[in-house]
Image 1 (cartoon, rainbow, N blue to C red):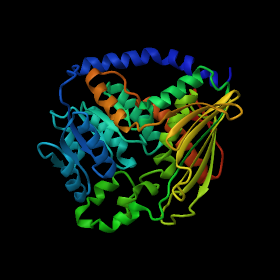
Image 2: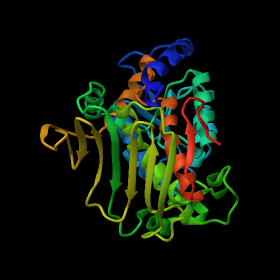
Image 3: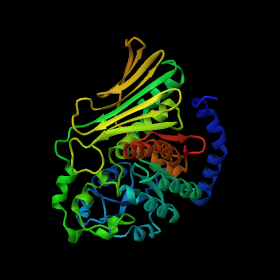
Length: 400
């Protein structure tokens, strides 16, 4: 049996019973809310991304009743966009989760806190919208999947392209054989940032306003460094750089449309060419061998000419997204159809809030997000070791 034939049919057959059981568990542990009932939401991590998700939840009818952060400077900007009564501030997420009146939480904390925040949330009986990447390590990711599935709670991971109808159309066309046999996926994300805004923002951070010990959490102990608090994405202790920060979005689309459970092996290269203050590379190139096709992912923040996009190339045609549109072309490059690519973020939050009420599975559940994130973790390992890393999709373990 080829690698790709172990994907859709065999996997759905194996997991259908499990999914049904999880849905029943969710229904038995939480009454289905009315369609017009207003959800009370707490937000853990109210930096720039957290505020964006906060605003989106409000736009879809949720009430923000509590906010939590390790940085006192984050509270003011968040409170300014909260409609209605001011939310209660919490310096400890455990205290926020102890409230009985909170239906669900939005988690937009640094990656190294995702494991504790989401596991504590589901154990407290809360549903959660968890920002991507789902976890800081492969081990954390596995723990999250196990805890969430055992809890029966609704957890939506912030891989929002799963809620894009334009991507769904591309997936259906590939599945229907419109481009023939898929042989190559190319996906990229390029942006122009002459100066890293996170490093610049650190100049405003003050030690007395930041709970440094709490920020570190399970990370190694270090002297206070405002750059690490602000630009945590680019330090291995707290994030995985561009590969895990941007990769989940692009690799998720590649996995979804190609219908693969993951790569057989991953190799990655890159370096620090533009942002020497980063620990993680600012220019990353990964190749995921999926057996009958490969995924090529490129990301950098040095030049934004190419923007972000994805291409799916088969023996009979191609579907390519970029610069605000998606095109279907024959194998000679003649465009046959074109459609727009609107944003998916609002739809993704809407899907989460609807699933909290209906108890249906969200568009990006933790088991799917985990399989997508594996490729990013393996890519970082390949970059750091200089070696190709093998992976067994059936056992979900590294090949020795």
